[in-house]
Length: 108
Image 1 (tube, rainbow, N blue to C red):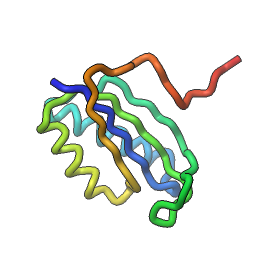
Image 2: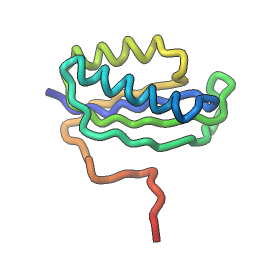
Image 3: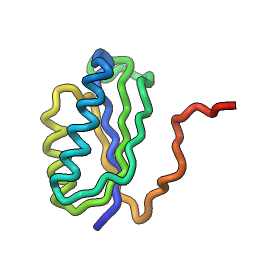
Image 4: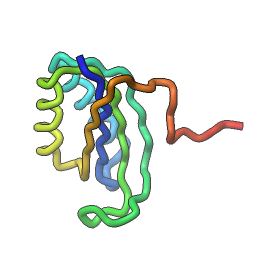
């Protein structure tokens, strides 16, 4: 099995209920296609540097997963067809860092 990070950017005009539905949809998709979700990070609503398809912001969801090529093919085919997503990116890793979260606010 290989390790992957899959980040999806959802449209800014979605409700929190819709964003939670997207998270559940892709985590179930990974589990059903012989994959394993190791961690899900919700980065929230972030600004884009440039407009993407007339959107200036997007909800970022970051999945850290373990899976096969079949899992990756299934994820890519579903994300390309999803109208609620603006962009997505999948990166393969030899080893995942599960402790570091880059977009959490430090509580002092």
